[in-house]
Image (cartoon, rainbow, N blue to C red; front, side):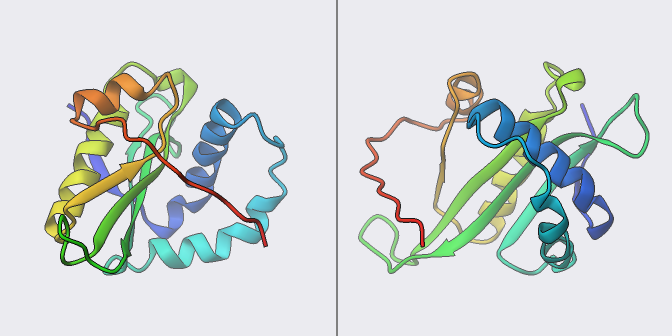
Length: 156
């Protein structure tokens, strides 16, 4: 299949480009990329800390050297344990994106499988994500189940 690798600090601009692809296709939010400049230093730092609670896995674009074909990023969060998960470690997947010219080649699946293995290696028992209607079949094929979500959000 495809070669999945851990994203490195030098991938930060491409990671942000693919994140913007995801934002533009899912959220229909402000298409501005001006925020990338402020985000880059933190992202580079996080990509350079492979032992932390954040990981991003990528596939290099086969036809465009220096660009990425796919991205999957996730974090491990601690929440106070409960009966179903005494350790309280939860994986959260976000920024699953494939370059529009590289879709339907299995890149997102390969990246997701690698991220799920990273979660397992770190003792994560539950993984959560928010899915678009277009991506839902991929997640279902990986074993994700829909769950009622009483999520509320406050912007500070």
